[in-house]
Length: 63
Image (cartoon, rainbow, N blue to C red; front, side, top):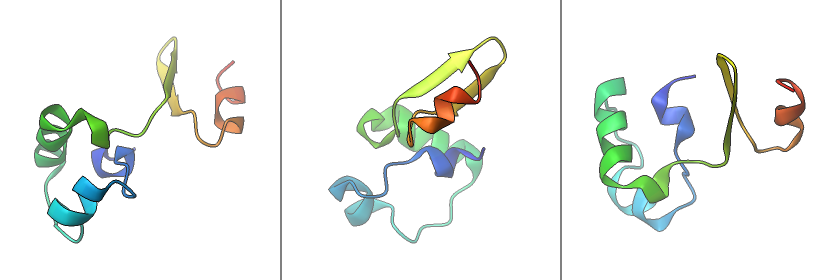
């Protein structure tokens, strides 16, 4: 999964500041570090796998 796919694109901050921007993976990661509210959650981790918890059915794939 690319860092941009982990962003909450419905957030006003995203719409106002980042929508339509073409950033590198490293730049998107820096955006998430600076604005953690933009990180989609929950992220469920088990062993060496991780999935977004939305939709909840995704979690079933790693348990």
